[in-house]
Length: 259
Image (cartoon, rainbow, N blue to C red):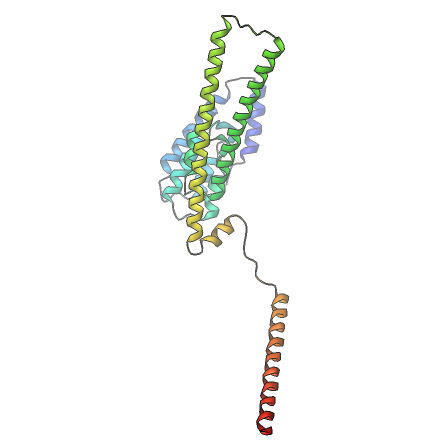
């Protein structure tokens, strides 16, 4: 039986709000880290059922994990040790973690992990792109505010005390831009690798249908009414061809008798 983490989390938060302690979540986070380490240790056990693994992981509320790198590592080890899991079982296990709480290293690894469902990989790339766009937007927002404040003040001459701060700010901007460019290149490589994997899947026998089913598409079979109309049309065409053949045969016979 799985633990209702949302109900447990709400009760715990209410108790902690009454205590008004800023360090109250630290013990719970330590327990979550211990549980993730334990799951990583027992994950290679071939006798550990998916429901058992899921029950242990769900015993820890979501808010107790500021970062989901630990639970991702445990799930990755479990998927590697149990390659015969169904797609539904892998989906259930991956719902234990949140791609929004991945670190940069975990996101990079998950985007190239072939054991994860395709939905999870796309979700990882989506949140990484969203995070990158947010960082770029915030950087430009701060830059525009600084320029507007400088123009509003009307002080074109800078004091000597402000010059070092100005240089440090410019260096920070350069470093931030370089880091963003590097991350954009990494995301482009990840998207390219996923495209290559999808191309390989499409080229294999039945791979295209499998990929369409993962995305929720399926080929529709013709309806019974359409089949009846098609068969009726074919029968009419067949009858017309037979009649034309008989007519041509009769005319040919008449021509021979006239000769």
